[in-house]
Length: 277
Length: 280
Image 1 (cartoon, chains in turn yellow, blue):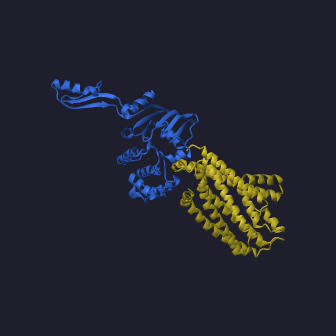
Image 2: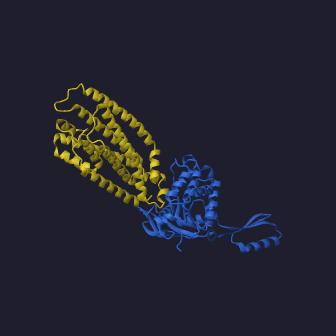
Image 3: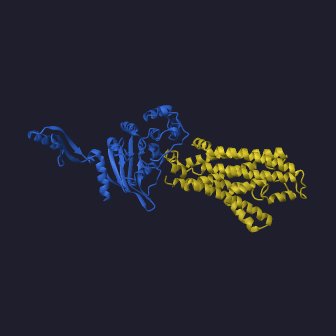
């Protein structure tokens, strides 16, 4: 069944579209790195700020945002119609009447989507790290974990999209998941603004949003990892973000993300088991 | 031994709409039962409950002695939905192989070849589903339903997209399945087809069984027709036992007789009477 889901994922035209967009994205990222690192040599940096670290972390943080977005697009389009959409098209019924069981089918769809999206995110992230490192000679403090956290965030969104697909039509589900994704990103930016203004309320709201939507918390934790060892004025400026640094994250976020994935998965299994097809 | 398919007091409500209002139905082993009824009568809902696709509001259904929807019940049945679609990129052979894996069938290539031959798709073995006509896809759907040698077959409008030749292929196939001891519940609007192949018919209306029985039992005498020099004479109250006497009387009266037919109502007549009678 995983093979079926994987093959379906690779067959969809969205995969080809995302591949083309990825090539364009990496090309633009290379250009951005090339010009930013070239020009920063000629600019006098503010007192105490290391310009190479600032540019490298900001550009890689921006690339992480782009990678997350592309990964989410892929994950959502591969799962948005997995249950109700496929049932309405008559694709699901011949599979569901087989003895394998609905939970297994749902898990297979998630594994199929993740098997496409996670390698994709890791490859694009690695490409962005290499571009920044080779062009600007700047490497993040944590090289692997941020990529894994991005991939984890995309796997979470895939699970949320599958849960939504039990209840919603493909179009409605796609809109809903992208709106939730957007809300998570806005909450993260809000937290950054709150941090810069030292607003406890904004920081608190962003923290709640990050726990409710942990893909955002994972992304923030990944950003934090880029400059984990950067201190002083540079570290402070990078924390103000929006890219290149962050102030939330840690082991608790990763553990909660796993638990969240389990909760979303359990809800999807229960809802699918009760759904008439 | 329990019946191949048993439904007891099945009720299904979709909000305020009652799709099934207490249906009792048995399909015995090796029996071919036709399920008839107008649109919205509850036929597809009944079949879907038996498959485990829809949960009954109350009542119970069993397939091969196991609760409908349970792994044991699903392992015993084959199903072709009224509105189905297969992934377009699969070839006929690949699709059957997928369903073999899902059904844990060990039939391998031999089973696939037999099934494709059974539905007259041997030549299209490597053709992709998206390149097949609707009729070919429907025949492939029947082959898919037969993967794993199910003991009970639930077919929801299996001939709706078939031309007359395709329908005859399916009819022959159904007769062969019955000979193999497979039980079939056939949901169809094609009354002539049901009349030709089914051992028993069940007519649903408004979620209830309004008529059930063997086609021959349901058909009623409708008189005797005699072809004479003066044209066709109809004796509406006469039956088979009266035919010889009528012919003898006509011949005795000097009227040549060229043919005689004992008339019985068709399944279509029975169906229309049942549906219109209940509706009025």
